[in-house]
Every structure is written in C-alpha cells, then in structure tokens.
Length: 177
Image (cartoon, rainbow, N blue to C red):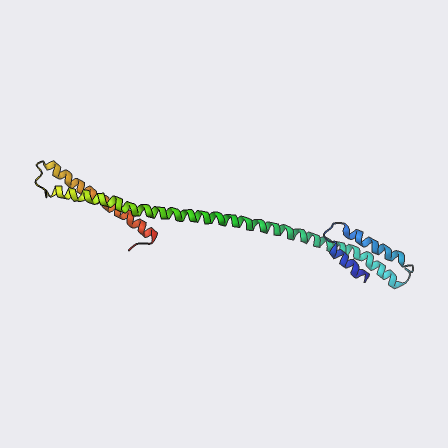
C-alpha cells in the first residue's frame, strides 16, 4: 500500500518538477526509520523496492511532464492554426463578396450600355442608309454619298463589335439564349 501511495503521489505531482523527489523522500525515510528490524528479508526487500521505486517513478513523472508540455504545445499550435484558418476564410469570404458585387456592377453596366450604345448607333446607321440610298432626295455631291456609305459600314462594324462584347458578357454571366 505504501508503494501504491508513492505511485499515486508520482502521478499527482508530475506537473511540478522536483516535487516527486521531495514527496517520495518523506515516506521512504519514515519507513526506513520505523523499520527497526532491517535484518528481516521482507523488510530489506521492501526497503529496496522503495528505494528502487523512486528513480522509476521519477522517470515516469518526467515522461508525463514532457508529454503534458508537448500536448500543451500542440494544442496551442492547433489553436493558432485554427485562428489563421478562420482569418483566411473571412478574407476569402470578403473577397468573394467583393467579386460578386463587382460582377453585378459589370452586368448592370453592360445592360445599360447595351441600350445606350445600340440606340444612337442604330439611328446613325438608319440616317446614313437614308443618305446613301438618297431616300430624301438626290445628293448633289458624290463625296457625300461615299461618306454616308463609309459611316454606314463603320457603324455596322461598331455594332458587330458591341454585340460580340455583350454576347461575351452574357456567356460569362451564364445568360446566353
């Protein structure tokens, strides 16, 4: 029972360096003093077990102490990594929200530009066609007719470019019909 008590003391005092030797010394010393008959083989064996048990339990307590420090170190490192991961996730969520807002603004801009660019461009194309075909009367200067044709051709080219850009933005947004 004394060995059991010493073992329990070792387990309970492992966290305090040096406390084990101090905690063991008193019971071992008390046992050696109280045993007046050290000539009996049982008493000698018990005294030797107590003396030999001190280094063993000191070793076990040291291992437990080191394991506790390693556990605390790993736990602290894990908590730090979790905090870093949460911070990175928050930054990622914020960046994703900004990207979604930017994409929405781009979509609104392109929808607005679709109307704002096409309407006047269609008017220019229509008037240049009226001029080139001399619908309102003959053009007396042939150069004006060429200019009207150039305006119409350039307008058609510009309309195709605008349509391609708008189609690309719709494809990008997943709204292609």
